[in-house]
Image (cartoon, rainbow, N blue to C red; front, side, top):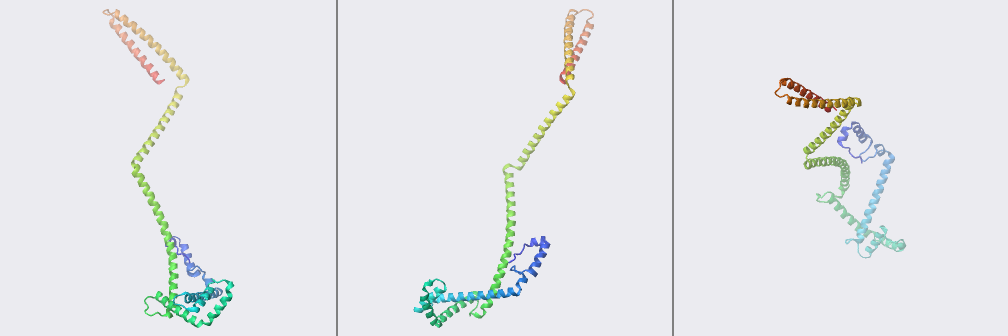
Length: 308
């Protein structure tokens, strides 16, 4: 039996759909057998022979079952004939030892002598089975009609074949539905996990924390870059010669500042002696000039210190 492809698969693959239609309509039967093989004379003959053998085997099994019933059933034979039928039935079922073939031969001979009685019992049992079978196939029948039994069995066989075909198609459809169900279930689980993470940890809090960590990393990077730039610029501007000159200039200015402070102290002492004396104005002006000179020297020293 060829399974029916999914309609979505056929619609999304037009070439495959055309191939499927060609195979199922012109080349292959629904049971998967090639039509050329199914119509071959040798195949037809073999199929008919196989059907005949199946019928013969079925008839034999039905007859053996009927003999078994009349031999062991409550409504079967009675007396010695019942025992004879039981032995023959056991032989048909292969339950007797081959060493007992002499005894079995005697019982088979007795069985054949009373074949008419046994046939009547077997026919009665089979008629009951036919009536029951008719009632099973069509419970609405008021009177069982054995002549309709072949037609009903053929119709039932057709329904069974169609049901098997539909079952195969439904299995394919069910497999596709289960696949889609598994995908949907996986998506549902992912969504549930994401929602739980947002509820437990908080998406806003996690975003803020990640943002803060990012900014902190950027700040550290900028700090390192500034340090590198400062050292680079300092190395380019303040080489060893410039630093030596600055140290010399600083020492010179410090010595000059010390001299000016001494001169200032001397002038202050001199002014103290000249208090109330003419010419005080000139002394005060000179002292102011000295203070300005000292302030200028201090500023230059401070600027040099900051620059170094």
